[in-house]
Length: 150
Image 1 (cartoon, rainbow, N blue to C red):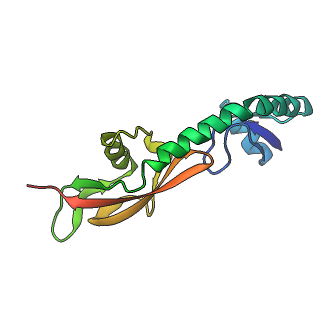
Image 2 (image 1 turned 90 degrees about the vertical axis):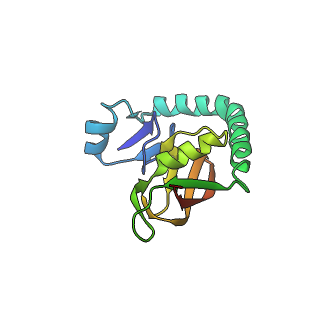
Image 3 (image 1 turned 135 degrees about the horizontal axis):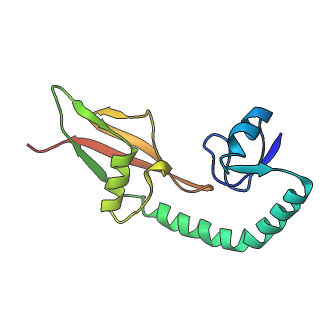
């Protein structure tokens, strides 16, 4: 079954992508949730026209996203966390903590666009995260988890 996505769907595609999914997934989940519509020939024509008109606006969005991504170069982020014995943390450091640290550096970004490699951080050290500013602009971010001063 071919569908046109109306919103970004994780591990499937981005808005206005034409993707092929199993019938049940499309009919029972994506379409009723408003995440997609059936890709009929007329819907594809409408999509093509919309994409043609949006191409110029899209380029400006990509340029803005690249400018935001350039701010990450050379940025040193240190996230303070409570530490137990050794270098183990009480709790963990997640993408929400990284988003908070970026906000302190004047880069406002929703936590769902940040992916910490390896999942949750549970030890002190240097870690990496992928930050998605736009579907075509993904930047690498390196951050340190340090012990909180007592």
